[in-house]
Image (cartoon, rainbow, N blue to C red; front, side):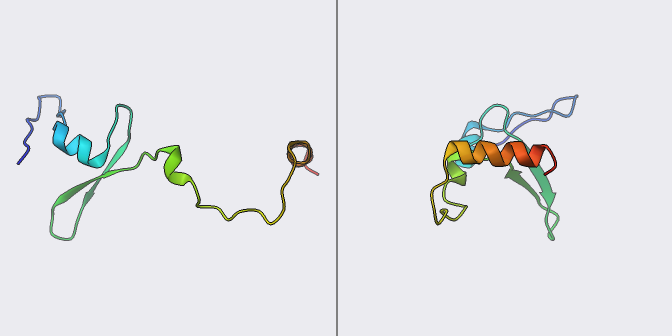
Length: 79
């Protein structure tokens, strides 16, 4: 079972086995949650952009870049 030591500054290193299991990389953000049994759960909150693929429905018709830019300009102008 992986273990770690807490420093006087309240810091610790997450063991490699745990980092690999959670696919944590430098700069990733994590959330600490206390569950109903008093256990602390570490939840990674950083997402890889590739994990977002497919979450939006495909458009029914293709939209050109020129049309997208026009809509962005118009919305930015408050129209």
